[in-house]
Length: 284
Ligand code: NAP
Image 1 (spheres, helix red, strand yellow):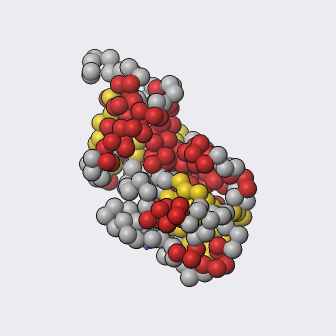
Image 2 (spheres, protein in one colour):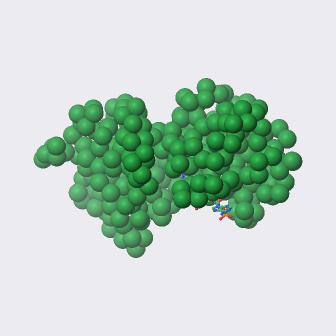
Image 3 (tube, rainbow, N blue to C red):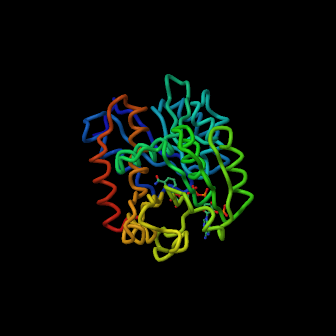
């Protein structure tokens, strides 16, 4: 129930109509009986500065930030958390009495779900990332922070792969491979992560790597969560590999934002249940 005590949080993006975040967060607030409500705000790039001023003027407790504002919002904030600064993007803002602090929970959400679901030690991993976009940057910076042994980047645009490699190379051993360098890149890769949109609904029959890159000793992870299990993951699982779906990253990036806004532990089971129900009902 929304009352005069309700604290408002929300999502800044363009578009936002497809987002599962309002449902997920409102279910969590209701479950914990917290006087919070979450709304989605469709904000054009040219209106972002005024929208951020609105966070202060209206006293919103914070917002999540999605495409296309994750980088451009940074110049409007008062403080940037060190990991978000290293990633170069913000997906969560906290309003502390008018002082706006930017965080990035995408990479930490990914790592939290990976460790919880697989039980695997990250420090032993030689990681191959397929893709070099915004999600790849958040995941790569966080994996570097957690001390993985090496990160290899394979991307359609070599220039973008090289840019990401240069970005993370101060913290981790890094190299760039061409998409047709399968043998070389996969030789001693232990963790393969798809950070591209290849295989996402409606293109569910597409695979980001050839079949012969996959084998039973790999851990294969996909950032995509619609479908819950991509063709990449189904194929890898059938070959005996351990697999990890993007749903956990989505739930945990939200859970970490929830914890920053409320100071309470997030009810991740309720959040997962809500998103799964929505996806099963055909919500995109
Ligand atoms: P982005 O910045 O636009 O980057 C997209 C990446 O995918 C680029 O590396 C791009 O290569 C590559 N790519 C796209 N289509 C391709 C194709 N047909 N063939 C080869 N490469 C292709 O997007 P993003 O924000 O990083 O998001 C990427 C994926 O991560 C999306 O599927 C998104 O749903 C998922 N994601 C999941 C979560 C979660 O919580 N689970 C969070 C964020 C993102 P080029 O550089 O060559 O263009």
